[in-house]
Length: 408
Ligand SMILES: *[C@@H]1O[C@H](CO)[C@@H](O)[C@H](O)[C@H]1NC(C)=O
Ligand SMILES: *[C@@H]1O[C@H](CO)[C@@H](O)[C@H](O)[C@H]1NC(C)=O
Ligand SMILES: *[C@@H]1O[C@H](CO)[C@@H](O)[C@H](O)[C@H]1NC(C)=O
Ligand SMILES: *[C@@H]1O[C@H](CO)[C@@H](O)[C@H](O)[C@H]1NC(C)=O
Image 1 (tube, rainbow, N blue to C red):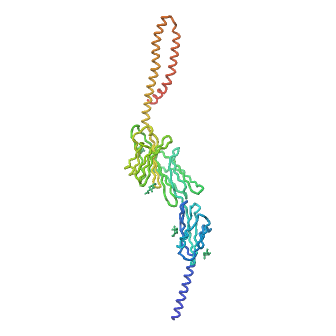
Image 2 (cartoon, rainbow, N blue to C red; image 1 turned 45 degrees about the horizontal axis):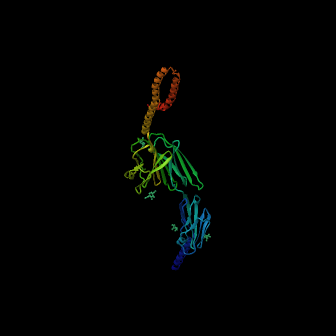
Image 3 (cartoon, rainbow, N blue to C red; image 1 turned 60 degrees about the vertical axis):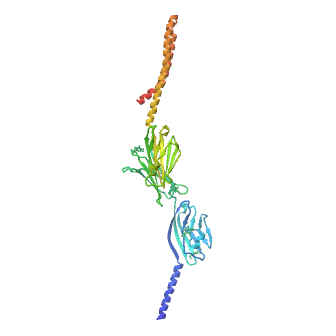
């Protein structure tokens, strides 16, 4: 009985031992790893196995094609931009390093490790993402707003909205996507500006498909009619809940861009470029109010003032056209006054010789009568003079007359 039980036990242990041997020599399958490489950056594809002191042999395959093999401390790479961390192999790390990853780096990779005890195999699914690196928004002719981003992979999503949001009309946009020679996408969307009395902010959001990072660009166009000789506050509010902003004010007049100032919220520093032409209230700026203060308005101040807030994945632009209607009327009135003076001077200049001539002529006629000479010749001269004055006056008077008609 005892013998039997011992033999039963030995059979059991023998079977268990065989099972363990089979188990250890079986290919060990590790769950697939998912890696998202960043375009043009280095990328590590993980592959780990139980550390082994004896000779380790491993290969890396991409879509069943051998791309790298490591044999007894000698690595052989098919591509120069693929390598492993040789020093890490003894620690059970056979991870692959892809340098300068491109869109073509995408795919299914396989790592096969042979140790004396077992064979380890693991799959790595590689995606490549070129994250959104910038967003632009601007006005293009014929009343359109354009939003764009370049060098993105995979193709991002773009959405328009307005603030305040218009319940009835949803923004109608034309969005175009194109790929460059590196397979990176450019997205350009054009929206027709909506006719409304409201100060409408157009908001464009571009979202990447993998990391779901969202970039936001917004634009508000408005205008102000101002008086010369006064101060002016051009409003500009930062987007809500955005920390660490940079604010720049730029002045555009006759296609010339002039930087006014830059404000950095992180350091609370203002850098002025255009001396004495505009100021920021530092306390208000801290609260997100980036309004520009212009102390004394002159004719050189009419143009477009652009306030640009840039923060993490956000840009907000306010374009304010500053017009000088009242000042224009004053300058016109000035010039009409000047013209009246000119006309008066001309009339005087023409009239005075006439008066002198007439007085002189009267004397002359009386004198001629005295001497018995015909005054006919002088009458012709007088007519000629008259012609001259008729020719001169209307041309000088014409703008004045037109002007008065317009103005009154
Ligand atoms: C393998 O080694 C590389 C290089 O040192 C390291 O970046 C990586 O995290 C290691 N992988 C594991 C799983 O330890
Ligand atoms: C690794 O192990 C597998 C399975 O035992 C074998 O087919 C293959 O030849 C081995 N590779 C090397 C390089 O030893
Ligand atoms: C639009 O903005 C301008 C400049 O800030 C302001 O003067 C005007 O009153 C605003 N119009 C409306 C309808 O809110
Ligand atoms: C704030 O923004 C600047 C410029 O974009 C950047 O250099 C800085 O690291 C940011 N600081 C923080 C705390 O995010």
